[in-house]
Length: 249
Image (cartoon, rainbow, N blue to C red; front, side):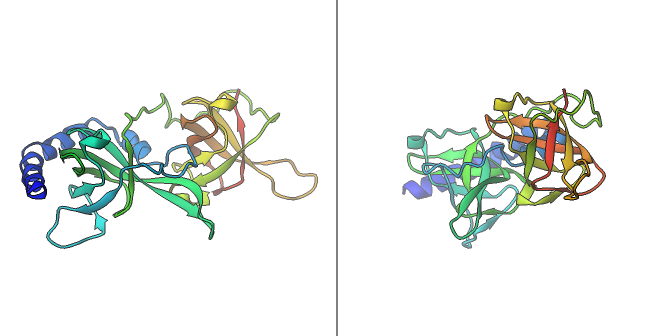
């Protein structure tokens, strides 16, 4: 009976309000904000052990791949603190090698809670960034802020070569990115970075006697203590994992 009641509540709530609410929220996000929300978070941490996960969908046929406006069954309910209207990022841990070392997370989209009981909840997919699968986990949705002039090609100040950071990985765990793409770097708040900070990108060409080669420019979008999400603003060559960054001061 409990499952039947939840299904009925889901259909009533989702049909009456879910679609309109999702459209209203997404309409307030600029294209730049949507792109940032779909980018990876600035952290290499794996999913918390207690993270809520997608366990299936409200569908007559069992599926493991989900998309826009699908109704997802989640692994927790009011006992886990869920309430109707809450919004969550949908993410998946990226791993490397047989030891499954975490390389951070990719963002697959975000979901809104439309029905809940003590142990289970139903979420409606508000936006899709990538293929959503059974087992993907949830993190609280945080309002996206676009740094002022983040899309402008600027290079204020001089590169500080006293200490250099590195490009770590691109969106979707790519080792190569270009102008307009997002990338994680191994610098964060501990190194004085903040949203809007500018940096130059360089490469060691591996030839004795030659200086670092200028590759492009980037801007910091969001930060954690030891990492930052950045966007490559300009590039005269592909930007690779391991390329150097020098903060402009």
